[in-house]
Length: 339
Image (tube, rainbow, N blue to C red; front, side, top):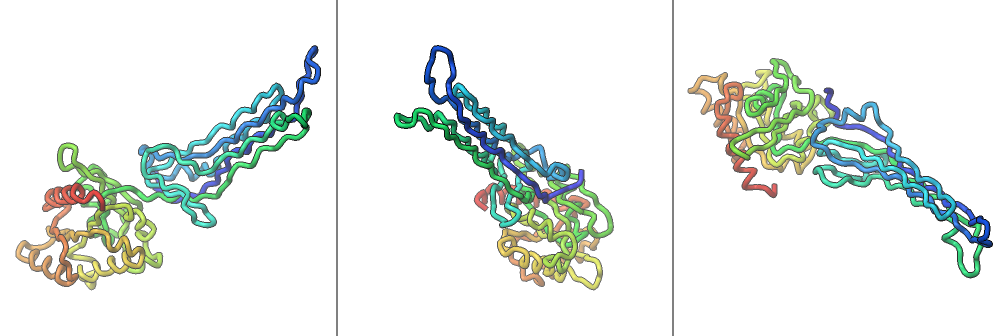
C-alpha cells in the first residue's frame, strides 16, 4: 500500500431541523392550541484513532464527509429525528488542523473516545415553545442553525519510541531488519527507503519498543532537498534518536564526521527541540574494517564530533553489537518514561 502521510478533507456537520407551526385540530376539542414540534439536531462529525490503520491512503479518494441534517418537527408535538453522526477513523498519531488558519483541532494519539471536529446545527423551535397566557395561538417558529463546516488538513506523525537518523545508505534499514520483523527495502543505492517503516523490537518477556526508520537526509534537506525533510516530523514524537553513521561513507571525499555534521545541521534547522532530543551515536558497518583499524577510526569520529554521549559500534548486517544496543535502549526507555 502506498504510504500517505498528509491529506486534505472537507467536513460538513448536519443542519438542525426546522420547528413548525401546527395547531391541534380534533373533533370535540375546540381551541386545541399549538402543537408544533421542534426539529432534530444535526449530526456531528467525530474522529477516532485506530491502531489498525497506519496510513492516510483511504483519504485519497474519500475527501468529503457530510453528516445528516436533523428532521423537521411535526404536529402533535413530535420532535424531528436527530441527524446521524459521522465517525472518521484515522491512524494513531494524526494531527488535524484547519487548512486556512492552521489551528489545531485534534491530536489523535490514543484509542480513546471520539473527538468532535464539527458540531451539528441546533434544532429549530416549534410554535408550542412560544405559547403563553397572553399568546395562546403563536404562529412563530425558528429554523435550525447550520452545522459547522471546515476544510481540514490531516497530517500523520508516526508514534515510535526510537527514531533512526542518518544519511542515505547509512544502514538504517539494515538495522531495523536486524532487530525487528520489519522488512524495508535494502539496496546499494541511495533513497531505497521512500517512506517511514515501523518495527517492534522485543528484548524479553513483555519488554519491547517501537523503532521508526525514515528516508535518509542529505545536505540542504531543510530547504526541501531530497526526501527526508518531509518525514522528519515522524521523529518528533520519539523519545530517543539513534544517529546511525556509516564509518566508510560514499563518496570518499566525505568523512564520517563531515556526514554526521551535515545531518546535525539539517536537524537543527528543521526543529530546535528535535535537535536537543536525547541522541546516541551508532557507528555502523564495522565489518568493512580490519579489527585493528576499527577502534582507532571510532575514536577519530567521536573526537571529531566532540561527542561525549553514548556511542555504540556495530555491524547491523552481522548483528554484531546489536543485542547490547537494544537492551540498553530498553533500559533507557524504562528509566526515562517522562522523556
